Image 1 (tube, rainbow, N blue to C red):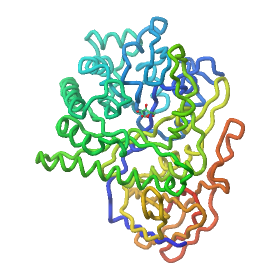
Image 2: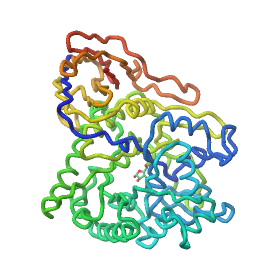
Image 3: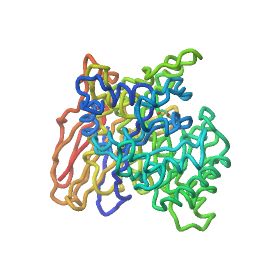
Image 4: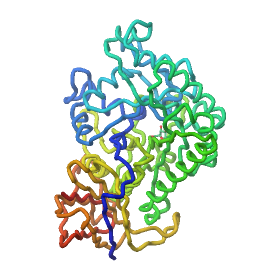
Length: 502
Ligand code: AHR
């Protein structure tokens, strides 16, 4: 198999926003408790945060982190999580059938974020709550001093405001499973009222309205149209969420999951632009793809889900998917799709960060390690700089059950005008065959390959576990040829690669 790729820095999609490399921490399972926060752990700092996890999060290169949910937020009372720890209530978390101890809340999480060097993106509860509670948490978080809630934050030990810029107006309100779920009209009205009220405190906030929790929801498309008709002037982003898993052993379709993500984004852009046109608006709506990943959701439904009315565990092991090589290749391809849409997708959150469908795993009192998905994320976050380029890619296709004929190879390239550096991210979706990709770099002038790293294994199901934490990693790849404006690379079957040229 052969493919041909042309790179030309004159044809630009848009700037690569650092917020594309965001993640998500929800009060769910062991993401917060026994994940980022474990006071008794040998590596814990004086605030109880695991420093081994902090180091891994820093190395991962995460920009913005969405918090505190997720489905959790739709029943959350933010004020339970501030003030003296010994007075914080234990509550039922209906979303995950757990007990929330509230030992970590807004101030603690913001403190942890300062340690990892990431920005806070905060979700307000529009499930069981509304405008007033959103205003309250905004006052507590962002007002300097001199009001009851800002002074409470100071009294609680946080003198400086958190200055949170990005706010999600609820979570997955299109989903029947969501506490407070209603129609698009109902949610759109509430989101609009909440956004307007919040802007009376700070007109510069960046606000995200809930789009669909999947492109396969029965209300997909209608939901976006109606919500945007209600909120177009009040918000800056509409959200998208998408999770993928192989179904019935159909790895051909699974490897093409990014095709579905591409179509999802294109459809939401078309819907947003329709509303823009009808309104005669000058404003462009952006996408916050604030939940994306591979997730073995069927395993959660079949094995993990807790339902007993007398069983509300604290930090149970939920959604602890172990990611394989094939999962990481699909995952890397999803990142390619997000970067390809850099003109409209300007924020994204890998769901989630630690233990829960996460690139980082931990054991209580024990080690922390990198899952396979850690590698495509950390490398892409480190290398994707400057602007996304429009690419010309010619390659064979293969037939999939779910998406029809799809290209065997997918790729995206970024180019940094200041440094002249170019990065190309590629996947080979073929289950059996390598693909030789000839990359025309002639327009870039005299460039050479700086690095070419690949994630691949003979066993596509190989994974990193507590016992074998480094079973899968990146390899500096072998067959790179350069001649007269052409770089040729060979992509093994089921592989993700990053190539840098300088
Ligand atoms: O990330 C896990 C869950 O997936 C989130 O809580 C929810 O928003 C989505 O359905």
